Image 1 (cartoon, protein in one colour):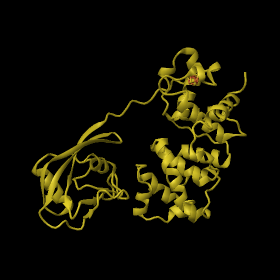
Image 2 (spheres, helix red, strand yellow):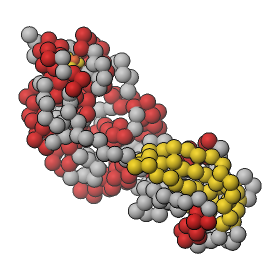
Image 3 (tube, rainbow, N blue to C red):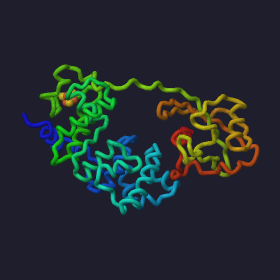
Image 4 (tube, rainbow, N blue to C red):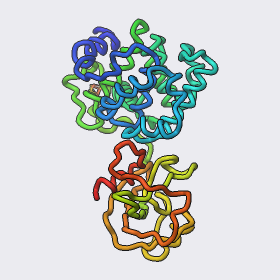
Length: 347
Ligand code: SF4
């Protein structure tokens, strides 16, 4: 039988490489590969497909991203969510400028020392951009290997992760490490899917242990899920000027830091209807508001919180103070937090 790597790469060359049509796949430069890997961490490939070419035309190298201020950062990352990634990418771009003359280092250890680059991203950049035999183990690769080798230990345990790393290195084609890693990810995404894996179409089916045992649905063994916490949040819509509304910056240290939000007591702060909401608004913004009826309600999840955001109409009884500004809610460039954007869209 042909080797694991030969069968996998053959499948990748014949069926996957072109079928996925991903703009970052043509990129040979380390910056483009780095940016795409960071975007893909928590955002769907379809969204990244749209955002990536525009981002790269505006910021073609780490130095151009290192220079952006907070407002520009929020605008440029708008639609991708999880803005912390964009800030870490800017921090790392500054490190690259200062310590490595503006070029991403080839050494995997130096790569891993940059802000926001964990084990997986380090392996992806080292193998895809620099052709180094480094594993890049994401959820797709975990699933393929757990099934192929019938690994029944909990997949996220450090001992299991160490074993996975050894197995990936053992199976890797040292001549094409970047393609090998991408092929594994593609196989997990397209064939060895979490549910109903298409074993008949899999290039590894001849010696896959889970297939032989019929245990595909049981593997990989995931850690117990954290229970999600329901949160009732509130915000207010305060008309200001012609078609404008009041908006506030999310304070530093809070989720969605630096973005714009409709005034409210804070997205993870549970709220009681009635005067308690007026008191909370007064405490947060130092001004008095009269809260009226409910306008709309939206649902949004952040990490393990399930948020129901109620949006009320409100009027200002004093000056807005320095914490809020009047903005045009139709301006597509404004860096709204996702819950506020959803609520405005629904209106
Ligand atoms: S044969 Fe099935 S379970 Fe095994 S790696 Fe392929 S798709 Fe996954």
